Image 1 (tube, rainbow, N blue to C red):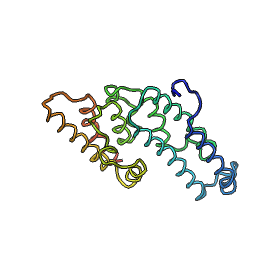
Image 2: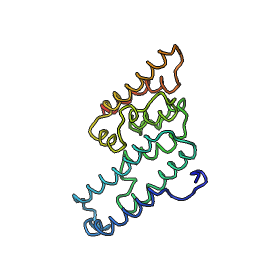
Image 3: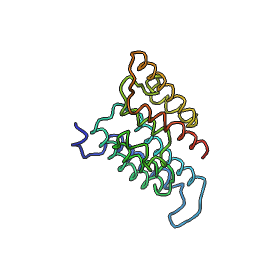
Image 4: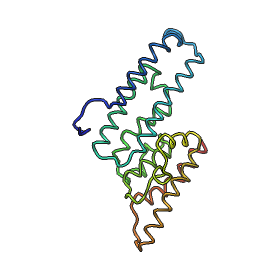
Length: 214
């Protein structure tokens, strides 16, 4: 079914709604303080981390899919809007999650921007550099392989690697794919690169440095 014509939530969102509701009814209802209480418990902090993690995972993995058609973009954007409901109702208020929530809100319009529009977009300040750079692969030619393709990792392996690395290390892996692409272009005698290539070279180091300093 064409996602552009489908107004239903994705299977992922249906499952997320079901399991977060189950988790709230079976566990959080017994462990969290009442809504009238303002006390902050260890459980409260763990649930905050869990809710943040759900948003971070969704943001991360939505930037790894390739290719991304216009109907795919509509589906991802719809899921981003839907995501706030199960997380906010069943885990933790999304407006209190800070950076992960700002990143989710920023990514929604970003996926519809052309590469040439991204460079000066104020939305970039709310997104991790790895998300922006992986998003740019969407508009790249097939010969510019993503870091996921180059290293032949399964999505789960790639995600676990992300957890153990800083943004600067992720940039190094992405830079290796850009170097491979440059070698291919020069080897066949071409002098022009995809517009995505110089943009990634331009924003990659600065974003990695900014994230590291934070």
